Image 1 (spheres, rainbow, N blue to C red):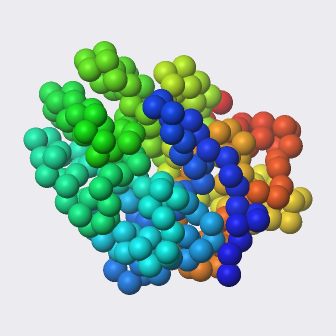
Image 2: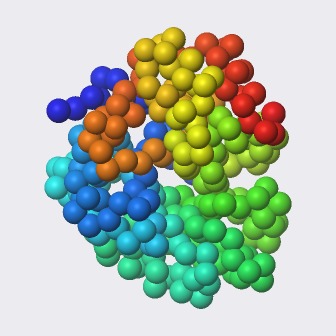
Image 3: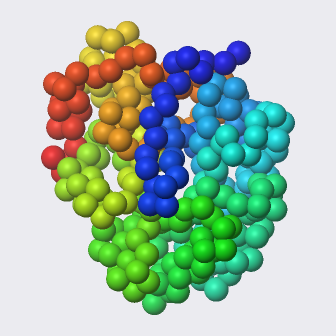
Length: 265
């Protein structure tokens, strides 16, 4: 079973000319056989962007699912993340990730979270070096503020391509979104379906109007903003449902209403 016809094809442009699918599949807290199965379902449903991390403990399963899918490596965008506390171990950590993922490169390598101030720039420089070596086609950060991004760019001359942060209609902040765009940094959101979003009455109302799930409305909102979103689930029905968002659009009024739910708007 596949749902490719309803799977969105929007992508974000990356600095070096590549692209990053706006809808990806997150794997946080999914391990072992569950991870192998869930990623397999996601690939079957049309997802061509997988998000994992060293600390998730599931890189091997994510890699195995891709091999078992029969898809070519270049058909799938693979993200993994370097622990923020791993300064000085960047090369070793990336090589371990590549071995587990069974690939010679990742499409995006992120610093998972900021470390102590003194280590941020050296860690970023190591990311830059890995990018130059072709081990990571794009590099970025996660959970960084705009000021932290500016510090890295000023020190190395290289701006992170992506910043992955917690994001949803309830966290919408136009200044944060605009700040990323001004710097040419792709905003990628995680935990979009947490924090009360699925039960929010305004989101429920929009979902009923479109005869959709609240999860589909939230994902569609991200896509229409050009923001990467990586919903995760280990349930087959939800994985497929979350992928079926290419055949409807939110109106301008609905987008504005959802934007207005954020404390920063």
